[in-house]
Image (cartoon, rainbow, N blue to C red; front, side):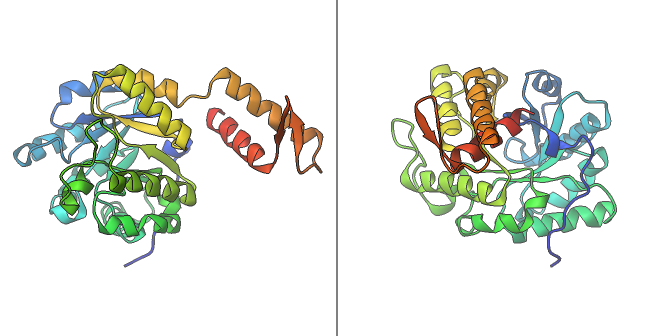
Length: 299
């Protein structure tokens, strides 16, 4: 098995995108593609996996290929079927000619699985082609949980790392991944945390999973705010109505931007200082790092 190698990056490719919200749309519902693209989401995911019945997958592949072949105003990712499904080769053959902006990779199991997917794409497109970056859904099997630290070995092939709260409980025989009040159970919460740490260890976007109750606006707002608080950079969405709330949650406020600018300016004015006082509080190197990261996300 060949190791992961960096893809040739497109000048205006997804690595340069601002990602806050990423909206799923079933690939067998092409009448919804344009609405999803116009929702305000930073990217859409045309889903060939769970949302499409087996009998509908050939039609869905063609619908995705047709969408990708036309001019598009929104970054368009495609979720293919898992490596073990027997379906992924047909998925890739249909969609790669249209140059999707990223491949969403379900049931990923660390860097070795990224290398396998990368090899399949290179086999179809050639080593000199622009190979789409990959967004693994990295917590959907028991084995995947032990591989979350390995993504730093193939970080140049990734656009981010996300996780799922539904497949893992099924994979381990759990009755549910959520408590009666909607909170995640301890095993599911562990998966979320390890995804977060794995993404930051790799230096790529940490992407929060979906909030399934799309009619619960207050619940979504609280969930997205928790994700931003904990260190996630973006979030998956399942309905266009969720996009505006997610975008707001993952966009720094004017006050946050001003504070970050003040921190950077304070250290620029005192480059030899280890700690400084700013507006009645102590700031040091971690504050400067966080301020620079926040400003980088908006520039």
